[in-house]
Image (cartoon, rainbow, N blue to C red; front, side, top):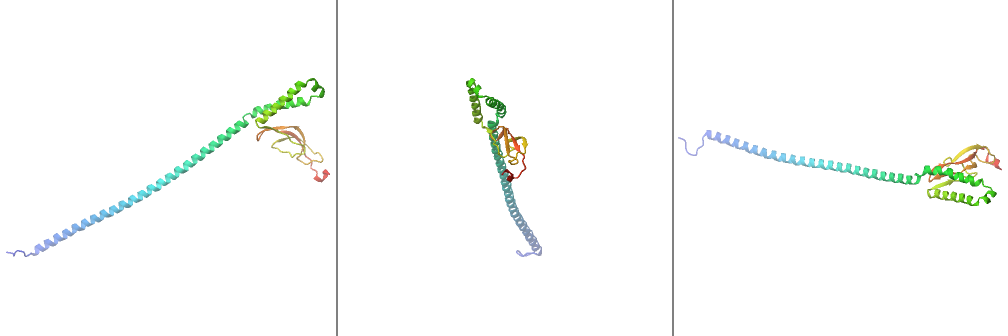
Length: 212
């Protein structure tokens, strides 16, 4: 019979197995806790990356929206300016066709007055004064609508923008390209040509010294 308190060899083996089993469980628990900690760390890192990614995407989206807004405002301003320009042009040039048609009326009144001699002036004075008054009123209406005369002078340089050369002639004592005769005055409405002034132009090729 074995004495109480004395451990047998089998008991030692059992205790060692129990200890080994207990340590293994601790190691497992520690490993689990470590794994949880690592998992938490990794989750935290993933959250930061996701947050940074979202912030980058948000910043990029804000930048795109800002660009679109700026372009939209620029397009709106350009549209406003274009509409304003078209409105002003319509206001100035809207009556261009009518103004061009009225030029022949002006020309006919001018020719009529030029062909009136002194005797006719005395015989039909009221009628002639009426024609002159009508012509002046027509000129006043022209000015009101920015319709101006183009009145070149002899010796002036020919300008193809406002003048129409009806003929060329090598007139001595002139320079090539100079206006030598005015046939019909022109008209313009603001900066747009209604009718070019019809002129004769010198084609003389002589030296300037030949003038003297």
